[in-house]
Length: 304
Image (spheres, rainbow, N blue to C red):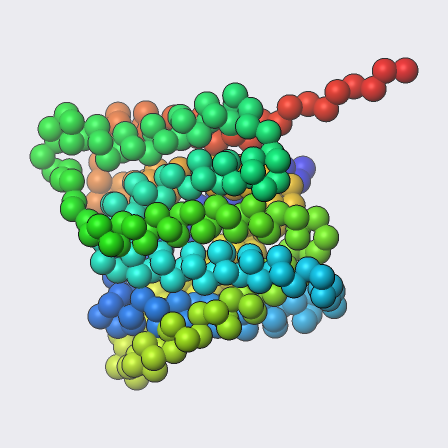
């Protein structure tokens, strides 16, 4: 199995965890943990795990001149990204959040073009366009066709704005962290990104974190919190940086389009929804879009 295939498998797993996260996190906030307090435990918990694992697998240290880029990655990839997403999701609907997040690949593509001078190819434009059409068709088509069982859920303007800021900050993070992947091991990068992120998150989440009643928390809610810390944070962030050693930030962000399809597949598996032609069509469009974005122009052959 080559590295590109491994990267795509890693990104698919990331998509599965993110799809589940919309449901799990929304069910925990704000009754059991406030959104900023949740981020406090999420970031500090994941940072602890990164330090423990890194201690056993690597002794790599980062250079002092790279501190500014690590701090920038922590700001956009941990602090702003997570605080705005959880606070936004807390007051808007998961439906609105998932729609707004489909703007992320476009923002990544533009950021990569400006910061990394990454070329915007016709394939990438076509892939991102197909992915967006596929994602939005899951929501818009049922409404346009009058399916009464699927209703348009109103969100909150402030919450929607927070989700948009989250999408933008995550896009900048993916582009910022890419050069670090060329110099350091994946675990080293993510360990220090989260370490700096802890400092930034602390003042915003400390008070809500102290208010959590762990003693009376239901078991299923506690397991949900652990899932977010270990699965959606520790594992997902590591798999993302692992994948970026092989593929571009644009490919990583394109997998966001898989989340609505994966969420729908899970609903079907649990008997919550039935297979519908719209879902099949959306899945084909999204997977085709991801494939087009991942196409690389072959290197020119050297002539003798």
